[in-house]
View 1 (tube, rainbow, N blue to C red):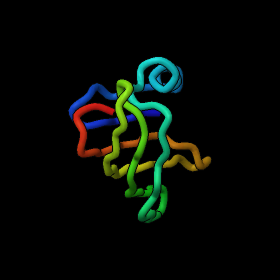
View 2: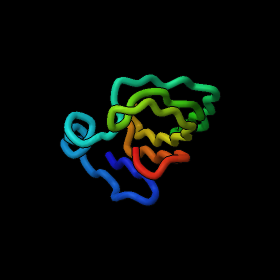
View 3: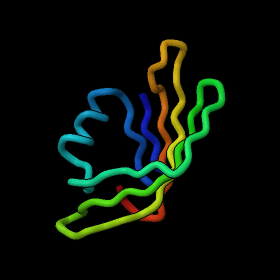
View 4: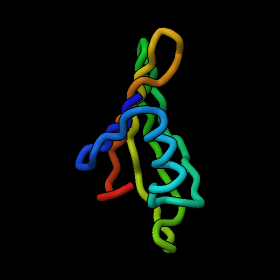
Length: 87
């Protein structure tokens, strides 16, 4: 599993991804609203908006995620684009 966020170091492997979400992710207490989902073969593209907290302040921003799946339906790569510097 690779989590790619252009402009930031890629996160590689399940344990690194778990550590990111449990210990490092600067966003918290939020929710994602999906506006559009497109699936083509083993790739799914999602466009939406996140509303939540970052460093104790309310934030909201748009995002686009691209998920690539293997033959067993597991995500092998996620690429996220946002209009913020760090998520």
